[in-house]
Length: 191
Ligand code: GLN
View (cartoon, rainbow, N blue to C red):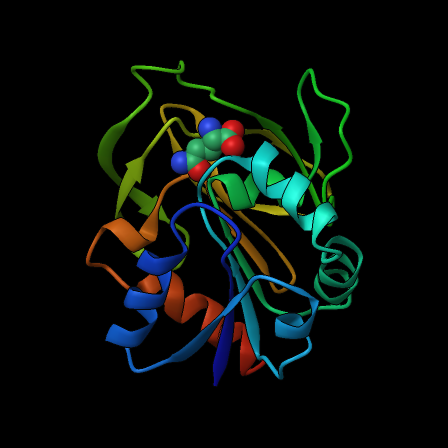
């Protein structure tokens, strides 16, 4: 099992550390040659989605990543990664990877005071710790996607086929079950 971690900007090192903890090999994707390496799954880390999107285009990664995710490569998008996968982001028109049928609100909890930690039910997992940093939330999921967790009445995790997104940062807590969900997708064990 080998997981590609998009490493253009943001919290990619923390995801790699989390994968190493559970004995999963990973590598960093910074250019098209990296992307051509064999991989079983992809992680799109948190960070700044506008910067990441620009770099995806500038480094000629956008179209190949989009195609592979759309074709079913198991993918975990966290925070900014969730924003990149969304079909629509409120009040913004820039095209993203757009492979997931969700409508997202960016910086939904306010820009400065938007960081907090909580614990909430996650479908199939029970209580999961959740750390939010200037996080988005999912305004609504389309018929193709399914909500997996809500906090304060807002959807904070969803899934569509082998794509899983969280508005929170699983790499910052010690609970690794979200990563195991991604690995289950690689083994074809989608619920
Ligand atoms: N606010 C960031 C964005 O809109 C996301 C924050 C994060 O990834 N922690 O891209």
